[in-house]
Image (tube, rainbow, N blue to C red; front, side, top):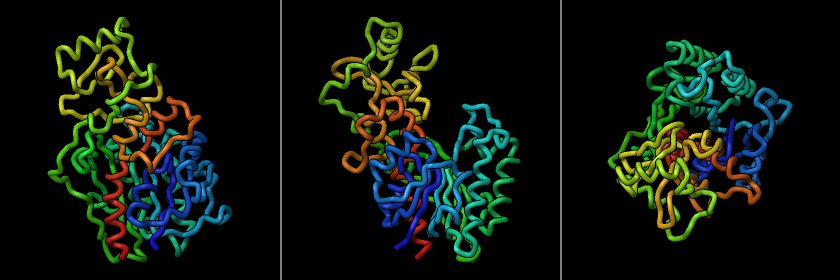
Length: 328
């Protein structure tokens, strides 16, 4: 059976996607204690190393060799929404810890490495940052040559899930196993985009705390925007205004949703104007009811943050399927 290990595993989006393609998840690594709690609630049989990647060691921790390693490493150092400090940010340097671990496996290093980050990584520091990553992976013994080794993939165009989400995916193949770069990224399909409301609980009143007070400043602002726009549309509260997504999709779900009302998609239902629940946001990342759950005592703030940090499961499943194809 093909095997996978996940660095920066979060709540297990990569693991879920690869397991759906019949990979066995052997181990995972996650530093954040809250994300680790959610991971354990869904993958109790997987060995989880709850520590920083800097403290993780193939030898001392007994990391088992796997066919594929995945890593959605921190995006804040490279995001246009952040300070863009790159490798000057300690979180930016963890990329080289990924490479260190690959080298520690020696001749049993993973055959495929799948990486995820924000599109801004490509242009950060005028391309110098990405060039260093290319050289680093090549020095570890991997086929990793731009532009064939990466693709910016959009959740909506590839899966039909109505979320406007672009993410950079990079794939490296071991020289010892592959004679050439054989991986093919999925191409956008003419798949039907499902309506946002297919993912929402509209047959019952949501938790009271999700609703805006109609007499509040923001409640009145939403009401005015929805009266002028599409009453069935999806809206988002920015710092000083409300914006509507004209394409019947939610804006990119981000970790910032955990910081309050800003950035959380907002709709109008039978009972009023409200934010989407974390569970509804999870569906819009491809986490299906019945196959994923949050621990009962996990705060709503953490739930939003974890979903925003996750990958879209059906999109990553397409990558997992291609990994399986070229490994066989």
